[in-house]
Every structure is written in C-alpha cells, then in structure tokens.
Image 1: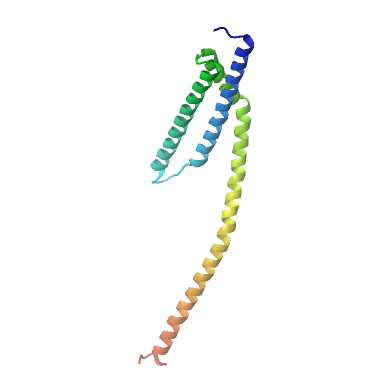
Image 2: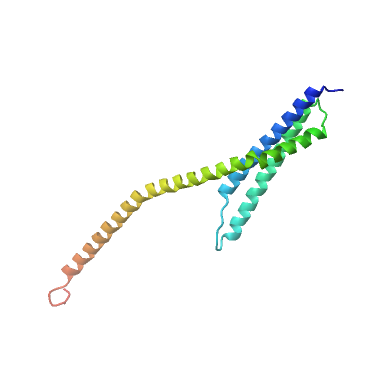
Length: 166
C-alpha cells in the first residue's frame, strides 16, 4: 500500500504529539511519586526506602505498560495495522523534545505548586491544632486542679491540728 506524503506527515505529527502526551504523563507520575516519598532517619529508614522503591517500580511499570498499549493501539489504527519504525522513533523524539523544553517548565510549576500546597496544608493543620491544643491544655489544668483540691480536702479532714490522725 502506498501512502501519500501528507498522510504520512499527519501520522508522524500525531506520533510526536503522542510522545509529548507520554512526557506529560511521566511528569505527573514523577510528581506524585516524589510527593509521597520522603527521607526518614532512624530505625524506619529501610522500610521507607523500600516503600519508595516499590512506589517507583509500580509507577514506572504502569507508565511503560500504558505507553506501550497506547502506542500499539495508535499504530494499529493510524497505519492500518502496519507498525512503522518511523512512527515509533518520532514518538520517542516527541517525548524527548517535550522533556527538554516544555517539560522543564511544567515540572518547575508543579514543584512550585507543591510548595504552596504544602504551606497551605501546614497552615490549615496548625489552625486546627491550635484550638484543639488549647482545649486540651485547659482540660488538663482543670483536671489537675480538681484532683489536687480533692486530695487536699481529704488530707485536711483526716488530720488534726497536732498532726495526729483520727
């Protein structure tokens, strides 16, 4: 089957866009992975590292399976079932071009929004924790005063002025 040059160009352009979509997906998965992994010192360090490794492994596995399935379906429908190496190469080039250019800007924006979101979450937790902590401290002080006044009254009624007990 002979293809016209304009249809080949369209397929290659769509392949490049598919590669850019894979770049966006990879950045989103990388952002989520980095948001849920953190460094811990101490006795739980090995467990946290194992969790980070497993999270990375499953996200990368998901990405490659999803990208492979999407690429296969794309090539099957756009090239009438013929897998052309040029489409695969252009998809990889689209991915790399996205990562080198627009990917850096988008990932920097995602990191910026993560910092803002982290500050909002910390502020919200502090706003919730302050009243709870204040009520807890008041209850502790009241219970301490109540327990001291009860124990003091028992001691005063059981002792006489000379220090003797009844």
